[in-house]
Length: 375
Image (tube, rainbow, N blue to C red; front, side, top):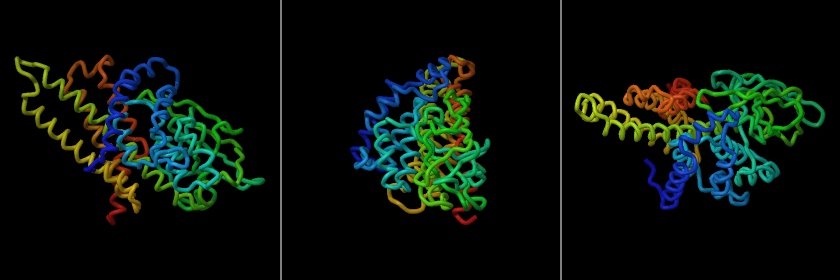
């Protein structure tokens, strides 16, 4: 596991304190019950911006702190512990990464400072079906006038309704991973239609239709037809960032359940003394620690440079298996109360099911990892 510096430890502790006080699990329940169709609390996001969390991987010249991906991963883990709804993943990790990796000077100047201060929400519009498969991009971008015209639909776009900037994966030629191009599209551009999608975990996403959306040549992020060179490392950061959040939720579920089995009595005994439950809890804890090693290895690799594809998929595959186990065990070990809406276990399970599938499930990432390792 990573050996944290004093600054990283302070950042993690600050995130833990803020999440528990300002964005507890009850805040997600309130968001759900309010039925506002918001994917997050704008006030909470504004606080994150004020604390500098949105700019952790943004360079200092664009009002960020350039503190590194591991630092941002620590924050995501702590917000994951309370199921905090925010565009931290879509904007601070994914959006900022795309601009850092491939943005022109003008594109960085236009957007990075806004992202770093929490003044703008950015998101990646990549998937077009119920399964994560960026190589099957069908949304087209054809040359027209002084730029391109986009036609097609993206679905399950994180924070899509609240986004100011859409990073759109489009096909300009070829098939598969060849001929893809990334475009920066203002979310309020003529021809963009956003439809709210209610997800199982009470957080929002959007289906976004592009009907003759015109963008200039300066909207291209990276190079035309060579978008995969940019998209793949951006997705790696999405995979590992989401895995960090999932690690946090699984860890919180473990802590809550451990406290419960230490106090709940059955047949005149504390149920935590039952060997069967002890074995299951030990398995759960072991999986948390092995997943933590994988997640932190991926995050550190981003900061060190080099090929991160295998590590990112390993982290997401492990995290997907972990949250599935954690959410099941949380409900089962709590017994009857774990089946009720009054208990938070249901919120953890619903969040687990969404994050398992988001950006590719365990099978997708096991296959990707195996191919990267030569199998």
